[in-house]
Length: 496
Image 1 (spheres, rainbow, N blue to C red):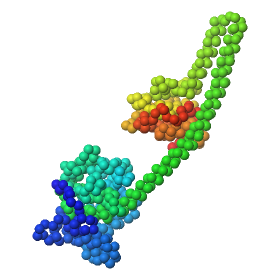
Image 2 (tube, rainbow, N blue to C red):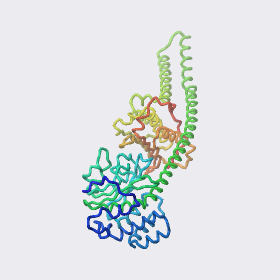
Image 3 (cartoon, rainbow, N blue to C red):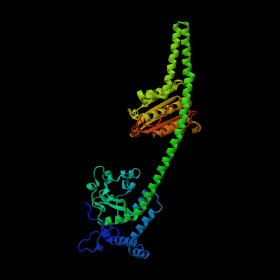
Image 4 (tube, helix red, strand yellow):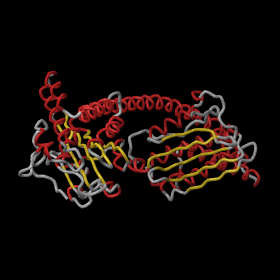
């Protein structure tokens, strides 16, 4: 196993140092070969000629170089150029060049690791078979976890190993080295990719067998890296700019959604206050006035019969029930005392009790208590969304069954409300205040709301998903105004 040179390679323009490799005594440099065939005379001369042409930048020098190089290498370099052309995705561009690079350096696996976020994180694009490193393209991780971080940092000019499985330079606490073992990436070459004079990534070439690469292969790999680096770097920068613009656009859209939603929610809450005021005036205050008249009558007569006292007691009990209903609507005490499942079950039973025809209800909770581990704000908003979904189903869908499920995944809490009623009608969603409230409440706690038909058989399913970690991190001391009970929707509506 070659444990890597501590000495630095000569600069990229010094072709002899990177292409010829160390010279054995008494051996003509032009007669030496390579384990892969790359160190042969025509290819070494080709690399020298191409690099000299790039260095000089003169058309005449370029023509002279082309005249002295191997037609095979010229064809390969032109093929790499053609492969790069037209690609706007860095991963696709790299994979397109991998086939041509393999004709110069046979390999089983090749990838590029690119620096992002001013070098703090890195992504990876693979060619050939894919490993968990490919996940870094969508979910970059800190550069300090990369097995090639020594090259990233410029601590060594390159890494060359005959067996990366036992080479401790690739293995350390927290290293993302699992693909080296699962992919049996033994022989490895790691060379830097530079743009504007800075290291922007690495080109990594691997084979399953041990001791398959030498210094000549390192030189050719460096030339390939220098050739593709500017193009890959430009695509990475473009992709980062695109993602930044998309994130900014999403943030603006979310802000606008919350602004409009909060406005609608405020209007709905004001309607609810007026409704509660009317309930108190038309029902509770009227009942209390009637009780007061009965008490006054009894006092005037100076005696009260048992039947009169029983009637008076009934009126008082009725007032208490009505007041308790209004208070429960304002503040879900069952939720606070017994948890989400019992609160949902209680509301489910209340909602179907006055239905014109019987509605069977079922609730299943397999969350193992994770629902009640959410913060008070998140749990209350989640309850209000479920409450509105049940109200819509019971009042407007004419279902035979309503099913509520509370369950968890590894990262999310998921609540679904399913009915077998009429399903989604042709009603403009803007006409339904209840649906707008559900969307706004979901947005305020960062939940995902899905509303759609049940197939086959008809009906509607509403699903709310909230991240368990973010929901638990929110505190009850939040300055956000407490979410009050939503008004019922004026009609059945759905959005897909």
